[in-house]
Length: 126
Image (tube, rainbow, N blue to C red; front, side):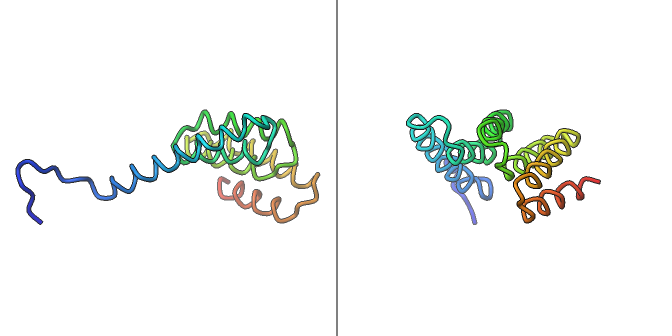
């Protein structure tokens, strides 16, 4: 496909990435507004953490996941997501630590499915 000199070619998928970032940002803003009503809502905290993760904001994602864990130490998948964020940043030791904490939390809660899933993530790092 030829382009005119006054046109610029978008990178493949760039408009999709921009759209997804905008939608994620809008969703994040809505979640934050909901969180103002109930600052200890672990579901909202977890959702905000995942939105930060999607945006590549690892530090913020970790901060919100830590808030989830502080509010509910049995929220097993917060540890799993925390491990995934650390992995994405290349911090394998921190990822392993998060996974181990998640396995312990799942065992204490009696959630064998979560324990097995987090254990599988840990095993992939071995």
